[in-house]
Length: 441
Image (cartoon, rainbow, N blue to C red; front, side):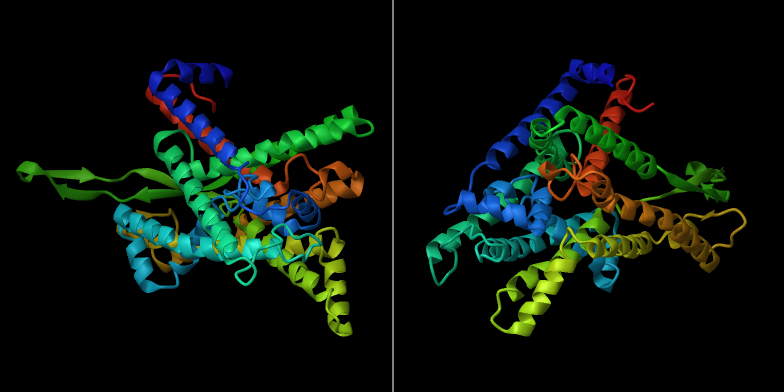
């Protein structure tokens, strides 16, 4: 790997891409330290100790929300818009027709996604600031937030957060176009890695610090190897293409086709999307319960207390429901994505077929059965990764790590592994074009 990296730096073009990518990531980290107006830093620290919803958003903002900076939303509005568009495409016929129109259709869908990002950023910016200034978790991060209290300050906060989100998206697109790797993913990756060093220092300063650092480092490395093994796993379905006679120039007939290929179906094709869905769905009841507990009505307060007790991220019931929801969302999201690809129709149109399976409906049924079986493995794997902090916490409980009980959260590990693998493959392709040995052997 180091040899390949040195080879990449010897090439002026690749060296420029790598330095450009690194420079923009450093710029984003600097911008992530600029807070929005009116932030109470002491209340912000208290808020993050008590709110797991904030920790989830901080992960997707690339670590900027922990400072409540102008980049605190990061690329999360764009991610939300992308997920919404992916779910709407198979539902709305017009969008489905546009999506099938090759590169032009994909560019049109991306344009719609950008249009949807702006109103989502406005809504999320206001909602996020209002929640963090409401005192629901015992801390008012923005004590003067609200159009009825300080309209100009409120408007400044929303504009700053929306502008920061669009700048983050712009930096991500610049990295994708001019650098190496997927820019949006690399921004999230940088925030996750930056949170690793405070966790290590907290462990090192505790009792038996060296032993704890060694234990959690081994656990993190083992989890990474497991994620890589499953993420790269796939089922290859053989495909053959029938021979066809095609008229060439000069009225010559030529036999084309007759080739063999395969359809790669990944064990985990849903990525970390099911973890985001499940986390957001489970954190929502505890967030509502935090408002209900301060109610003067006895029965409302008791219900809020029960929900906050048994559905909080530290409760056993929370982790059981988390596992079940991750498995369910994995099946749901994989099915949505697979139906969008419309592989049976594409194969039939290109003259391809699966040996022993009739084209058309039988091919569709066969592919659906294969996807269902392989998705079961991927869903159970994602569920296991999701509850890994709970499993580790049953064995060893270290307060310095908070509720994650890992050096990097399970969701963060999935992002880190995915981003590293994708970046390595892109750099390998660049090196192979110039006859260098790449990272992956």
